[in-house]
Amino acid sequence: MKRLEIIKELEKKALQLDPNPEQKAAWNSKVHEYAQNYLSTLDSSKVYRGANDESHPFDLNEAPIILQDLLEEQEKFIDSQGINAAAGGHMGYIPGGGLYPSAMGDFIAAVTNSYAGVYYASPGAVQLENALISWMCRLVGYPKSAVGNLTSGGSISNLIAVVTAREAQGLKAKDFSNSVVYLSTQAHHSVQKALRIAGLGESILRYIPLDENLRLDVKKLEEFIENDLTSGLIPFMINASFGTTNTGAIDPIEEISKLAEKHKIWFHVDAAYGGFFKLCPELESKYKGLELADSITLDPHKTLFLPFGSGAVLIKNKMALLAVHHYLADYLQDAQGANDQLSPADLSPELTKHFRGLRLWFPLKLFGIGAFRSALSEKYHLAQYFYSEAQNISHLSLGPTPDLSIVLFRVSSGNEQTRKLLKIIQDDGRVYLSSTSISEVFWIRVAVVHFRTHLKHIETLLNLLKQNFV
Ligand SMILES: *Cc1c(COP(=O)(O)O)cnc(C)c1O
Image (cartoon, rainbow, N blue to C red; front, top):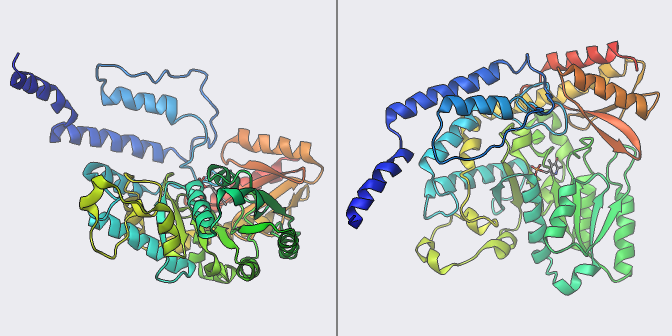
């Protein structure tokens, strides 16, 4: 066969990848129906459903299958196992979200496939992402000159911050084993992981003890820094948590920032869980000093209720972030334009990336910021309500007054009984809680974070607790 005939034959087959409008409409309607069905059964199915005995090979074949079969597999092997992350009863770990308009944004981003890494390739997509970062910078009180990046999650945000801090502080490999990082025992493990990935595995980690509210003790921090300076070590970075994952505690940001400034230490605030609560007017005062941080991690897939895969990092010093991530490649020579819009590719390790901005833009615009303020305030008040009501349940002991929307409680008679109670709650299945240990004390956590968590879920939990004496 001549090459042209071969091409024509292949084209006929390749066209399968671009179905006609009727086919697409039929698929859309089936997928839409599947999603609606899933959402309509959220309150009647268990929040934790265990793992199927039967596992699926998830193998691939040369031949196509029909959408109906594919959705049946989806239902059976994916959507009926494990934690139901879209359910309002999910109050374990840090629940995510799954706002519907984000799915619409993702749909359009996948169809148009805008190249959001470089301004030249999609000026609109990059401007949109930069505008979202600017909005977050204004929210935390950063100056106009601050920059940032929409990442895939808080762990990558922490990694970008750590690498930026390393370069900005001028650390060289020979300094690593003398460099000191200060963090509390409640810091998220992704910070230690980021340090290791950043080559700083040899650095010295100083775990600062906590005060009675499980916040980093500033006096102790100061003592550690002064001792380290006397010993000739290099205090390089302080990591504070704005809302720890375990208990939601807020470290004393303003006081820590003074120490960081005095000793020229990079100050990173991990606000992956807590950051967006700043939208709530009644919580505003807790955020004093946040703007003094050199870098801040936020996680829209937590407290902006987005589907997983949406984080953000903000860096106050634009040149510091660019110094690590900006790169000129020969084959990108057409993409170097003169404009004041920075490209995500120059601000993060990624080049080609998901156009994450759209899944954030759609819900923020369609619902308006006010809806987010209300939903976050609701979570805060639900947690406070649970905290005060649970005090009236005689066999329970409560953790510290929640700073944000995470409450700890346990059975007063001991760890064993608390474990049993957690099992009863998980087996009941209407709500899902997880646990933690602090100084060998076993606690059950209630994390009120999901946008579908409302008063009825808290009442269900309170009733369960009142009925079950263990
Ligand atoms: C969840 C969380 C992280 C990690 O974020 P991912 O989005 O899960 O990667 C980091 N820090 C804190 C405080 C968190 O709550």
